Length: 339
Ligand code: TLP
Image (cartoon, rainbow, N blue to C red; front, side, top):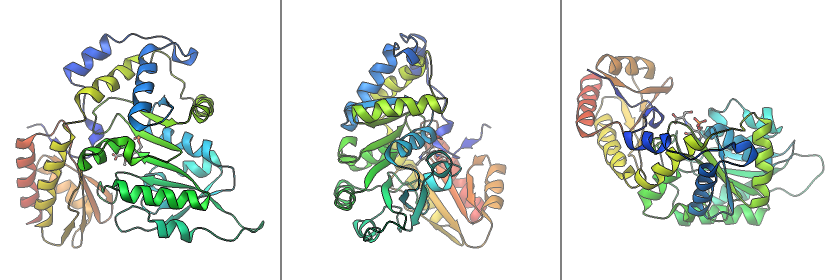
C-alpha cells in the first residue's frame, strides 16, 4: 500500500486542474518583466496581503533572505523566536547573506509578544549592536502550526513600530492562519514592512513563494533576487499553478486542520508523548521515552511517514493528498506504535 506521507505539506503533487492551468499558461521572459501570468500572480498576492507590490521567488527560504536583506544593514541584530524557520532551517542565511545576527528569544507558542519586543529596546550607544528588525512567523511551524491572531499581531507590530524596528512576517502558511481564524490574510500582516508567503505548502503548488511590500522595496527585492540567482524566465508556468490554487485550494485548508486535530489526539493518547493541540495542519509531539527517529522508523514500517525534527520531536503535517481514510490508517499506526 502507498505510504501516507505526513512529513510535510510540501509533498503534494499538482492536481489535474492545476496541471491544466499550468499547461495553458500565457508566458514570457520574466527577467525582462514580460510574463503576464507572473504579473497577475504578483498583483493578486499583493492585493490579498494588502501591499502595493509582490515578487515571485523560487522558495520561501529565498523570500525570507531577500526580505531580510532589504530591511537590514550589515551588523544589525534581528529579533526572532528561538525555533523560527529563519533560525533553524535556513543555514544561517541572515548572517551569510545579510551580515546580521539573530537575537533569539523563546515564546511558548512561538509568537513574540509586545513585551519581548520592548525588552529588545536599549538606550542608544555607538559601541553596541542594535536590533533593527523583528521577524514573526505565522503560523509557527516548530511550535506546532500555532496561529497568531489579529489582535496579538497588531499589538506586536505596534510595539515594533514604537521601538523603531522594521517587521518581516514569515507567512509561509499565512493561508492556514487566515482560514483557522476566519480572517482575511491582509488582517494578519497589516503594518508589517514585508511578508513572505508560500504557494508550495498547503496550497499544493510545485514551486513558488512571494515577497510582498511597498513598490519601492519590491524593486530593491528584485535586484536581490537576481543577485541570488532567482531571476526566472517563463515562470508563468509556475505562477499559473499559484493563481489556480488561490482560487481552488485556500478554502479547503480547514479540512487539513480537522485531520491534524485527529492525529494530535491520537498522538496525545500515546505513552510518554506530549502532543500539541493543532490549530492548523501541523502536529508536533515531544517524546519522553523514545528517540523521535526510532518512532519515525516504526511508523514508516506501518506505512506512515513522519519527520523527526530533532532527537525528541516528531512532526506530522496534513495536506491535500491525505484524506479521511488515510487519517484513520495513520491513527491506527500511531496507536500500534505508541501504545
Ligand atoms: N519548511 C519546511 C522545512 O524546511 C522545515 C517544512 O517542511 O515545513 N518558512 C517556514 C515557516 C517554513 O515552514 C518553510 C519550509 C520555509 C519558510 C521555507 O520554504 P522553502 O522550503 O520553500 O524554502
